[in-house]
Image (tube, rainbow, N blue to C red):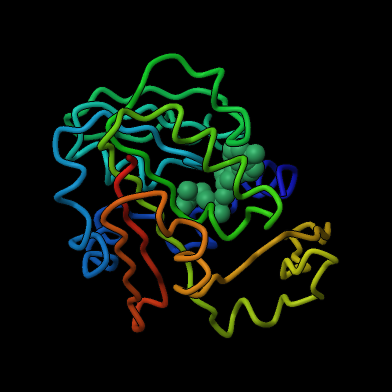
Length: 216
Ligand SMILES: C[S@@+](CC[C@H](N)C(=O)[O-])C[C@H]1O[C@@H](n2cnc3c(N)ncnc32)[C@H](O)[C@@H]1O
């Protein structure tokens, strides 16, 4: 997963169709409008920011954004993009070791990250994330619903039930990557009784889901 995205960095925006941020924002606005009110004037911790496309969306609305990713190659691309009014900073951070980050945040955001978390690592990730948030902070995850272009990459399910994709880059190098598609029921069972204001939304035309909740 790490090395796949490290090496995919130069191809990421083209593969995602994210070459123009305004176009991306307009395309995804039916989804963004569901949660943009939560971003306004917040101090955001962004997990797995990649090449910064969602950081750009956040930066137009937030007070500050600390955009983090484990891979240097994606952050180098992100740093060269333009951002909105928020104070935007970048740092290398492992989503499973967030305690190394100083300070607390009023909002956490991650796009296309949840689907890559192996099932056994979800509790540790969520626990670590919550230590970096003030009480009452919102948490927003945006991710993908199944789609034909991804179905073609199916390889197998591993021993803990993670869906594994076989993916290749333009030079032919192949990688096995976790790509899960959790149902609302599964997400509810993870968070039920532990968080407030659980809100799940599926945008069928955009083939995306969003989860927002309040950290208690
Ligand atoms: C599918 S990309 C999403 C990037 C970006 N959020 C977007 O939507 O364009 C997944 C990102 O997770 C990052 N990543 C992989 N393992 C990570 C980890 N353990 N901690 C933080 N980021 C990680 C990769 O470098 C990659 O940028």
